[in-house]
Image (cartoon, rainbow, N blue to C red):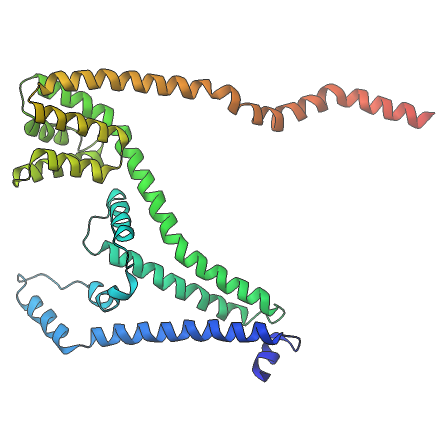
Length: 318
């Protein structure tokens, strides 16, 4: 108690001090447990022997890279959520953001855990140089640091996911037109997808990679409806999901793919035109706030300002 009174002042409440001690003690215990698990996993003789065997069996001239997975694997069962729905949802978001690695899910939750523990610890070190802060303020800052550490990876992932989905959506009209041309010229669905992926490598690289992955799955023996569903699941774009549904229905009933793509292309153009008209109709409503906040005040100052100044001068002279 004397140490806390010296650091934070003599008027610290007993309840706030106990809460602060429990929070700091829990954070230190979790940090110590994590460091112990990482060190024990890194110094495990079995893991070290496996790493040496893998390095010895690698081709000559290749240097073993630093593998972060062996440090995270011992903690994976404690970091990953228990609910399968949450894990699948996060894995889908990571894939839609462009992270296809098998360890991306574990790295994501490991980053959240490190930030959730590291930011409060950093905050605690910083507030040591601010003794004028009260105990409630310090507890609030620690809780704020933990909240930012937990939520910031989700926010960054959402931003990366939306940015990639936007790029896929921007490249979809060109891919659809090229696909219609290729299919109408006599190519099958798989060769048409391969040709479109090659044509879009420079202008729309993300969409070209996704189409190339679809073609690779079909060549590997995956059924075309399954490969197309995987494409829609990875992209997260509603327009691509609609095209995939149309293609699956066409394959199932044996109808002409060229006719179906031509009809969908026309409907897609109409849909884009309607969306553009809808956005144009919203411009009048959106312009109200800039006009009211920026244009009207300056207009009133220029138009009514001289008259108001004359009235003020006339009343002062009376």
